[in-house]
Length: 227
Ligand SMILES: C[S@@+](CC[C@H](N)C(=O)[O-])C[C@H]1O[C@@H](n2cnc3c(N)ncnc32)[C@H](O)[C@@H]1O
Image (tube, rainbow, N blue to C red; front, side, top):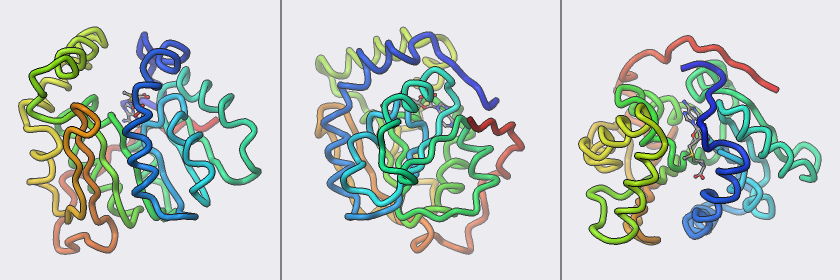
């Protein structure tokens, strides 16, 4: 993975036609966060979640390797109180490898399904080194046999070959539940199918980490590009 990764649907298209559908799940994420907390939003897309958290969080750092998405996020968050939001154009792996900052929460919303299978537990392990709690949001597996399940499948198919392959491997691996079986992290809360076809899991990060467990793989040495 490089420090810059654009999909055809990134930028304005994502911001106008995809991101607004996340508002119900974002409201739940907001409810889980504690007042004044520090948050790292990994794979922030166009910054819609961050913009909705401004009145609750003390500090928000957002990262995304898509230049188009980060561009929109930057514009959206331009009027935020000084020093409250930090925006990084970067891949999660390169960022976490170099980070020495701690957060109360790391949020990873609809990112896990699109990264390569072998990188998923690596990402979780890395997040557990910087965050007290990790909030994962992604598709519910098995997908519901209804309109939501069908729509998700179509959207993922339209996203492109590599994206769809990763989505299918996420489903085959039993989604978040499959990932949590492997992760040495304690699950403190889960919400399934509310809103429709979503799965939210809150994990203990730094405090609940099994310190005996070793990292699944070393984090790869990726290029980090910040703007
Ligand atoms: C489906 S979008 C989700 C955006 C937002 N979190 C949301 O819930 O609407 C997935 C985002 O993850 C980002 N992403 C993909 N691979 C990533 C990686 N290795 N590190 C950080 N972000 C990544 C993509 O660029 C994209 O913006």
